[in-house]
Length: 146
Ligand SMILES: [Fe+2]
Ligand SMILES: [Fe+2]
Image (cartoon, rainbow, N blue to C red; front, side, top):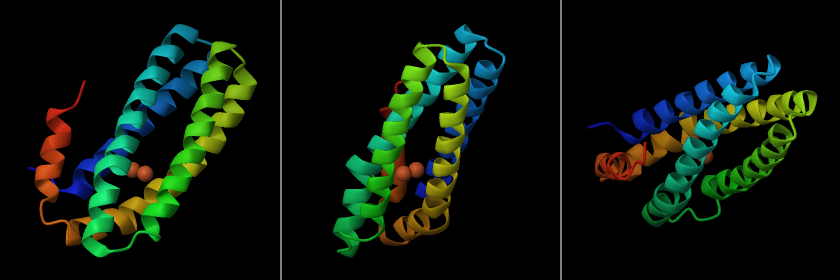
């Protein structure tokens, strides 16, 4: 059984890995590999954001009564990340290498800052307040597509 911080932090690392593999492939103009890594990244990220927004954030808000605090900030940042993912998706489809690499840099910085806030602050707070954290993680694991 893993805790919320352990499991969610490991998912950040998995996303980072696919993301940087996609970026390297684009730099080498290996478009087939880039697309496959990009799609793995995008689906991992989509699932991760949904686990936060649909399960963890509401549970945390309910447990703490903090509905306009850190979870609201995280939700807004998710929207910014999604917009960049969409732009990157378009750049990749157009095989626009320079545009992709520029956007990729922006998203990487944004994700690093976002993930750090979750890992240093929000996930530890969740572990403290959500007594059924390990069961929630088990639920994530069993509903995983890949
Ligand atoms: Fe997040
Ligand atoms: Fe996260």
